[in-house]
Length: 224
Length: 233
Image 1 (cartoon, each protein chain N blue to C red):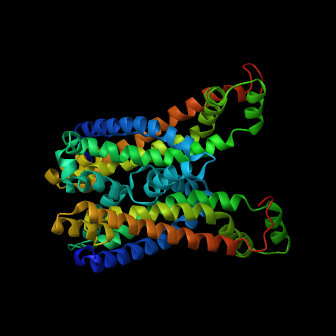
Image 2: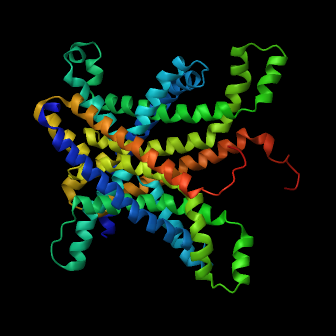
Image 3: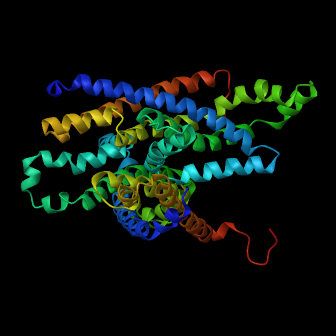
């Protein structure tokens, strides 16, 4: 099938999956940090987060990837003092993670605000510290409220992984590229890649649906 | 960062920015023209009519835009029938391939936004239109669509902003849009950080201007919701 290129495409698919999962981990951490900063009582801390989200939600993802890949090499070389080359995978994780984090900041912020104030007051009344309140009362509920928004962001992120092929990562897109050049059948191979991306989307949607169901167990819905 | 390089690349980048504006402008217009009928079919009560638009939206929203561009630009040339057809002079051009891929992509997202808006039009208004004897077509033209446009404006505006960002992918098929121009300049000056940062600033300004225009438009279209002049808020 596919003139023997199926194994290559599948190994590319695996790289794509790894990239997406690594980037989402970075992005979630950035998102929580960003949201915590945006809700901080200290103004300069809020400004930093505002600048972060304004820039990385406004830049094209491709430009972010290129900037991190080429700029990262320049920056790290300057810091280390010796030539350091950033790997395409590392640059991809960083670029996609930063972008995901910028959008996730808004999702988390919305979720934190949505938690009833009375619960936080109750926690304070029990004598919980701010940090403990955040960890025991706020954070466990944030996950449930933020999940649908984060799920959408993840679907976007997975499609954006294809951009990292532009800087040479041997992901699904790149393998399809190589195969189509070799066989002179570009339509066949890009279509095969498209079908695999569709498969990833469908699988992710199913997983997200289950996660949402799990997160919402015990919750009563106004209407369903 | 070398500030001199940073400022010196702007004139070249502005040329690329103009191509970006063109690509996005044309793609958004064509995309909307496709999205409207697709959305109307998508809300049909007949499952057979719904299936086509559903598959189209599913494919274009479920695959990366990069794959779609490559399918149009490189993929179609695989078929001799395409190469021999009268369309070949158009499909050979990276410019038109980018516009075709962008239009089809944004149309799929816009159709879904429009569908949501059409379904969000309060049912009482549709019933009222029927009660005064409007035909189905007239109801759509006078009541449903004008209401749907207003409802979907914020979401649709976001979609256009996403399109501006996605248009950077035009640089992958040799076009010298804003990102393409930046990459070309870097091939000469070897200053990726300064040049990409300058391109980023131009993108941010473009998006900021568009977002401001959107806010103004929303305010105008929702004039009925804001307090009358002279009234305290």
